[in-house]
Image (cartoon, rainbow, N blue to C red; front, side, top):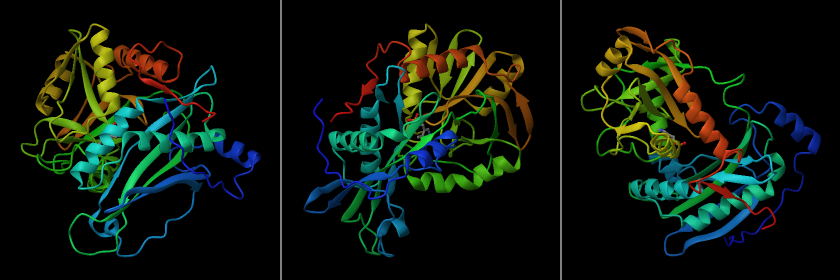
Length: 364
Ligand SMILES: *Cc1c(COP(=O)(O)O)cnc(C)c1O
């Protein structure tokens, strides 16, 4: 594929190799950043312009910038992996480019051409390739767009900045995947019909933080949201989709319908599960059913999924009325198999029958 040429202004004093090596030893998640970023600006009447790879540094932002007041902001999250064959690859980046456009559309922001989205990411990965961890780690990429116009009136802004930053990250679960405990919130919801639930926007996360805090207070790792209309059906976690595995080879996930974020991981798992011969159902699943199925033993496994954590088994569920476990509360066989299949494709240790892996030409 042709690569877009984005001018590069290299960092005058990048992190020295020994300091970088020390940071890469235990980067955690989202705390260590590479030396560069990509920025592209958009102005009404002019469109996208001034794409550049430049040193990562603070933005100049007017205190009246629209994003600071009305939260016109969207983002994406994807990873670059170094394969055993020393290729650098992305996983289904076109799906992220497309979702970014859909999020922009919902938030009345300009649509970024997919080749510019991908070109920006590739340029940053090439520039900061020395920051890609080997082994179980990866380089997490965070494309985002903010409204920069200084204007306090309420309407879509006339100026935006698209930016990509990158963080080396370790294995999400140190010492292997261990099941998470989730809190089912009965007072907070994430997204209502007609709202922004299907858009990857910062505002959804801002609204989920008190529920997540409530989960932590109750000894849980993550919050599970129910639907806003009836508080009855399971929707998703704060930042991950959810799946249920039954004893009759059926796998269930809530349907997309505007209140759930259409995860790339979710979509990939649906494909892998179908091809593994499981019966796949995208259907409403109530919290009452969840409790009854866990109790009867019909429900064998449940897991949450997303780019950052890949697949995380759900071992225990807590809510205002009590708690229950799923099967023996351990990482189940279907969860493990799907995780191994997915990470195998992502890291190039398994064949890629779906054409999901996008190799970056590092000479470009
Ligand atoms: C990003 C996100 C997901 C997971 O999407 P992936 O594309 O699989 O990383 C799920 N739910 C929410 C709310 C998200 O923001």
